[in-house]
Image 1 (cartoon, rainbow, N blue to C red):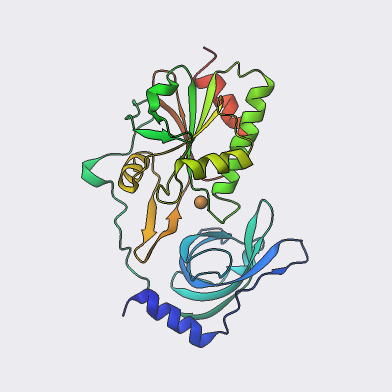
Image 2: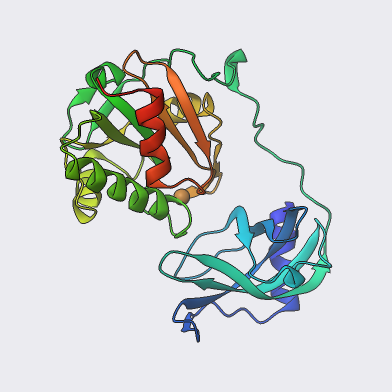
Length: 292
Ligand SMILES: [Cu+2]
């Protein structure tokens, strides 16, 4: 029996499932999360949790969750099975009422995170390997399409449910676009959002999503490789890891990377996670790429 099934059974036996959301006192929505702690940060504020489906919100996945009060995670260690309340606000998400309900052996990671085919993580300063893409209008493009621009690239997918992940990248890119437009894009920068879910995110889906964000195609392009392997391999060069559940390929576990590529096509900066700000990126573009 697969560990995941065992975990799911254990959780079903131990708890009454409750997947419906309810408004919290802080105005966010609340969901019941059931899962296993895979890793814990040293300060006990962030844990990687492999969790079951949250009906009506997100599929089963493994990702990191913050708590507002480190006491919530204080006594927990990897392997612990927990129940918690996931609070989802407009721009934040965190766990509260975290309770240990058991423990189980940790599953060995199935998909290797080593880069395929002897590829290595791209060093800062190195030329970025080109990639064939299709933009939101169905046009074939590649990195050369943007050779006049300082390129700011991120990896997201349109149906990502976590406000601190892809939706935050979208929001930050919208803010960068606004700041660029306000100064007539004197930095000659261009935003490129590349989907990590080519199966669902076809050009028309990307176009509709871009429209909801007010993306101006002159400044912000959405694109797909059209092929999972192609995006997985290319994104891996920047430290993006994407894993898809075997039984549901739209169940995606991923991390975040945002890149600045200069006008010569070299990688000049790579940000991990979601801590960067639009102003920081624009300042780095100005210093590291400069005005053309
Ligand atoms: Cu996401």
